[in-house]
Length: 137
Figure 1: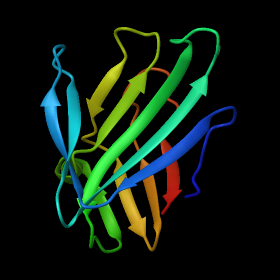
Figure 2 (figure 1 turned 90 degrees about the vertical axis):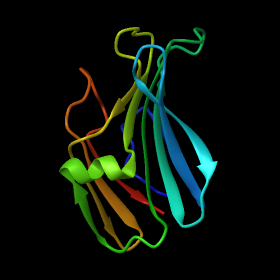
Figure 3 (figure 1 turned 135 degrees about the vertical axis):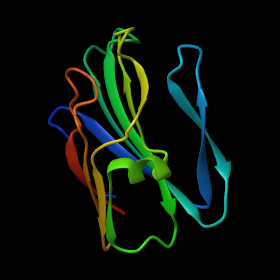
Figure 4 (figure 1 turned 120 degrees about the horizontal axis):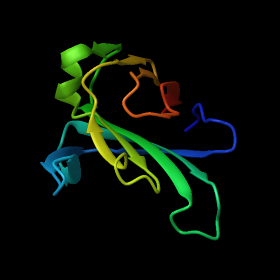
């Protein structure tokens, strides 16, 4: 899988076929998810990480986007409130207590054309690095 990745970062994509996301709330009322088996649904998970200082375990910075679609989803665009049907979450993990965690994505667009997703997100947290990118699967 090939995709856009910011300079000095490492990116990867996980594609979990026959899977769905189950959303729950963590103790701070932020969304969280678990993955369960489900025929006909695929979960797409994009991770971008920068390891600022390898000597500190929490010195890194990571952003994630995860969403699910029917496995037979044809080319098209999902945007606005329809994004809620994809269970799309944006995650940020860093030594930034107030900011860290997952956020529901309820604005932006996910466009599928052939084997490429183009994803555009609004600014969800301050300093967000992933806003517009493509992933090939």
